[in-house]
Amino acid sequence: MKSRAFGWPQKQAEWLLPTALAVLALTLPAYRYRLLWHTGPEDIYFELRDGFAYLSDFPALIAIFAWLLTPCPRRIGQLPRWLVAGVTGLALLATASVLWAPMPSLALYQAARLWLLLAVFLVVATTSESRGLLAWGLVISGAIQAGIGLAQFSLQRTLGLRKLGEIVMRPEWSGASVITVDGVPTLRAYGLTQHPNLLGGILMVATLIGAGLVMGMGSGVGARASLSDAVAVGKPRPSEARCRLTPIIAIFLTALCFIGLLLTFSRAAWLGTAAGGLAMLLLLLRRTASKRVAWPAAAALVAVLAVIGAAFLVTQWPLLRPRLGLSVEGVEIRSVDERAGLERSALTLIREHPLVGVGYGNFSIALWQRKSPALEAYPIYQPVHQVPLLAVAELGVPGGLFWLILALGPWIAIWRRRRTWPTAGMPAGMAASVAGALAALTVVSWFDFYPWFSQQGRLLLWICWGLWAQSVMSNGKGETSNR
Image (cartoon, rainbow, N blue to C red; front, side):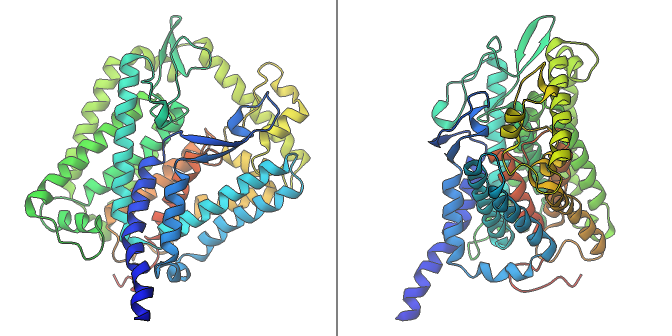
């Protein structure tokens, strides 16, 4: 009787956990929040100084609670120690920075968010049974955002979905993210995020993960294995008809994500997608992986994406010219100058606080207090758009070293385990796509700050770290790879 009493919560948690992770993926992009407290100064954008509860926090907390009721926490010891040390080190440094940050309450709030992200990372990394649902959730979520972004770009206005987190924006409004050609502004796709660049990063990851799902499919065994991984353990295997249909659905969703990615006009996301796709290809061409890839399905996806890319190039060439630096527009010049000023200011802060930094989440506060001369022309107090600089500026040289370890560590680990990577139980296509997503986010981190600071960007990165960890640990049941 006692064992039944203890077994019931665990049984409920086993289905609640993957469901919560799938919902987390679906709600991740939404800029839906409740303000918890408000602090000054008013010169700084409110998201950079206030405290919030985001919509995505709730499925994250439910997933963590359900995870604690399962045997999954026992698998933490199977994770790469350097990876756990890296993410934990960042959280510890962020917590310690409360002691010297110019706004300690902000540092404490942001440090608490890092501990929440650490818990999400551990949940994802140790729950291989939920991998399929989480991956499909990311792709479906991206497709939904892409559909909304496509409608926004076509109508040249946001859709009024404020209850879902959409901001209200029109191209002629001040502060709108637009592309200006001959004085005419064109609104970029926002989705339910607060900026097209952030939407671009989300769709970049969704496109790469979708490609991994496609490459792990095909007729027969590949499709059945991929689908069975997407449902909870013990559920019936899908029918043959469903197996044949699923690759088509995956290609369609991935193509939709790619369309939305293009309409964000995010150069960093485009470059990251190219780098991630190249990393995927190189990993899948290895002898141990190439035999486990559905190359016909992959070729079909590449053909679809190529047609979409060509059509976009032809129809949107006037808008592409200023984004590619082929024409000069005032908006682009201002953006470049703002970023250059932030970089100079970041270097100044690093010289002044090389060991401990200015405190996690306090970069904008420190700039505002210092009134940096580099920002006289454009007094915009926001994080510098280079994560390596931002990490060192906020957490000192130790923070920069932790970031370097987390950025380079996955590739060193893959090289050292090149004969056995990925571990048993993880499809080669999925493992390569997650590695490609990490490569893409690393590239983006040199051009934007959202992998370090934004709620959606950080959550996306920590989830990808968790998924990648599955490719170098046991298959979740204590069985290591013997390939």
